[in-house]
Amino acid sequence: MKRLSSRRCCRDCGYIGNVADESCPKCGGEMFQRDDDQEDVIRNRLAVYDKSTKPLIDFYSEAGILITIDGDKDPKIVYGDVKQALGL
Ligand SMILES: [Zn+2]
Image (tube, rainbow, N blue to C red; front, side, top):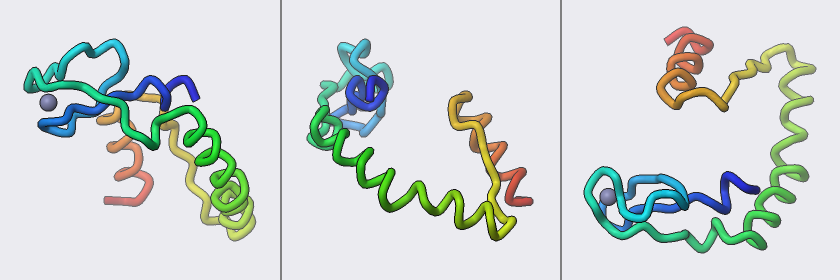
């Protein structure tokens, strides 16, 4: 909730940063909060995740094909971990 509600996007280049970015660090454009990053919308997104997406973890785990990737690392490292897990 904290991470999503603090997310901000650049109007000009689409860079995704956070509330600490007063202007876009890439192009200097204006940063804004998307409608789907409002707290009540996030709450609904998380509820939909719990109901519709989370059950897939058990499904794929029971099928023996679940691969878990730590998404809290630097995006480039996560991308590398995903590629490695998929044998790409
Ligand atoms: Zn920008």
